[in-house]
Length: 539
Image (cartoon, rainbow, N blue to C red; front, side, top):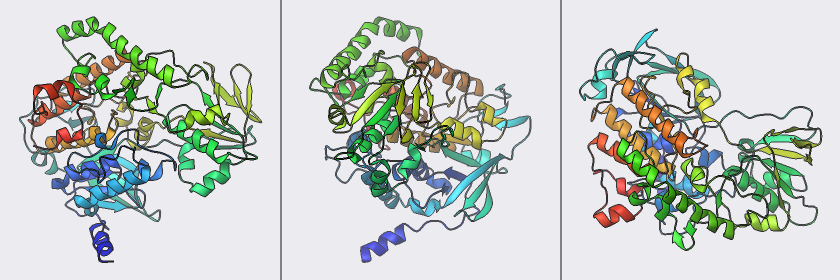
């Protein structure tokens, strides 16, 4: 009882926004908690729309969802898993418990306002001209002054008037506003639900709606029904498996996965008996792959090493084709494995997925270039085939960029996505043309937690004046170079993924912060050992 009382005291959240808070963080997921911890010196306020922290791991997962990464590769640099040597992948409940423990350990609850949904964002700055990150500049990026010397963010920004006005809906009952100088917007948000046309007689549900149901409700929803799951990414695979499990036994129906774009799936982090990290997660392994904005000599080396990169990809593909019945079910992609890895499209299979397919409880249908549409009795493929359905799940992903565009006012709304189709974020964090706002969680890697934490630390260094930014033009050129590198690496380049050059990316942020770039104890480990978040514990 006493322990529970102490925990309740630790988890006492904010009931009002103090006047001293000049930094607003929208969302209490992984990125929001990391930002709160790193920006604690600025007394931030975290607006969480729901009644609990945890983000997607609390509100947007299925009962069977597990992390796709080992525990040791998915932990904060200064807060370890209690059972970090457990070889099993954590369940979503374990992840939420871990995040709540992180908030306990660093006293983050005092910054959090629960039940506060940000419904509108307004810019309070000037009209045609505004002060951007590195001095006066116009919205088209013409710098009016050279980059300033590093000075504390508070002296350059916090002394002036607030730049962003946030409209809040508190506990779905009352509306209020809060003006802040700096806003952190985690982009791991979910898009709006797409509804099926009235021609379909059955039920259409987005996977986000399914996540909100209890276990008994999900089984009752799918039991004895012809279910079609649209998609072939992690959420679709997990959902199809749950559907098959719910329909076991007499009266059960098979689940059909409607697949348009194939991606490589992996049963475990072992390839022909070798640990997966050897292929992509060491400094030596990543030396083979292109980095954004690299020089001529390195570009020539990357060209020469193209056969070696292709050989690594073929080696992994050979194992997956041997281990999994991809050819049997027509699920072998026609693109190299590395393209999925470089765009963070690789999915770890849940246990028993292809066992259910072998029992004819999961079936696969391919949608061609023409896609599919709803029909009266189900879905109609572009070749004229009709798949009957009582229930159709849309598990095709969620577009965070559209959500950001919907929240931001003009002229910034039109700047969210550039001509490459990506959000042009310098260091994966700030938009050169959107002042006093950071976007954390948009960039993906093998460990999104590490990616978010290091960016929040970099952001804290920026706001604390530990380094100065380049000019707006230089930042724009830098993000353009990242987009070009992605285009040359994978056809799925619109996903901002750094998995093939994550160590180099971390090196750059450490250099900005004046921290050690080489984080291992010796050169042997530096070349051949995998990097994880513990290597980036603050000096």
